[in-house]
Length: 402
Image (cartoon, rainbow, N blue to C red; front, side):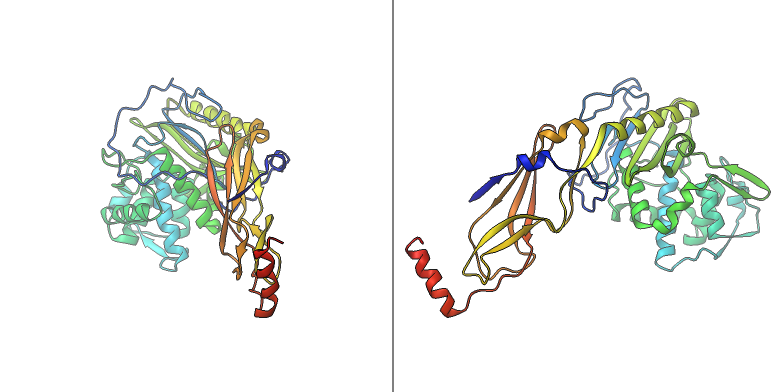
């Protein structure tokens, strides 16, 4: 086994904002957790830099590209998500649009039930028909409960059936601790999500539906002669903010799932259980600024970079390039870069033939505060085996140690 330290090279690594693969540790799959009392709002959040005070009962900040969690507080506790669960409603709508089972110009009828729905409203008129495009704006910008009902009934026949579709979709896309009972986030003791699931859902919306995500950045929408402003305070307070959704009920408090991008680097924030709209606006702004200021994305290797030239035995070329095959990026506190340790491990020589993409090594990543990671390395080229006559001197030479 051969090992080469690369700490010196790691110290000079440049930052990057173009990550394509996540090196974040994955949580093992777990069944939905039973609801438990939320921690007091005054307890601090956990971060790689130590505790950080936040008045939110639940919070999580995630790097979009790497999936690294920069801050969390009760992030796996099942909580009432209120209108933030409308992100799941719209994920279902967007997916149907993308696969052609729904059209933006498709007209859906307004039932009396949708018209009578309480809470925040788009102000639909009973007996009318509204396009999916306008209903989507009614949900996203105006947080219209009535618009959610129109979509749910138009897609599944009833809100109950639509909630089942939400649950099926949630399980398929990796929301491990979410249960939906309606399309609106209307209070229900079994309608629950976690901050981690909300961040995962926001990430999926941005990644899976870039053609529709821009709706979340629209600042106002007028329907039925009533103009309503987008309720997301981050859009006006946080540089680079472009989505997603607020929520509020008496049980849940004030919540926000938001995203912001600066210089190509995107963060996702979830907070819930705040005492007021003002607290929601101020706390989300403060946490975004802290996360952008304190963390950076560090490129370990680009996809095609040669990590090392590995000797090949009986090959038509003496070595084969060892590559990662994908961009390897870490999200780290800015002052930790100098402590990053990178090592390469492989067996040498590699017997020919070697196929491009063949696994022939491992990249070991560690350092202060960095979870240890083992990343497979692959051959960056094909190397054919030598013909019979050229192999003879190579074999003899190896026998005699030359």
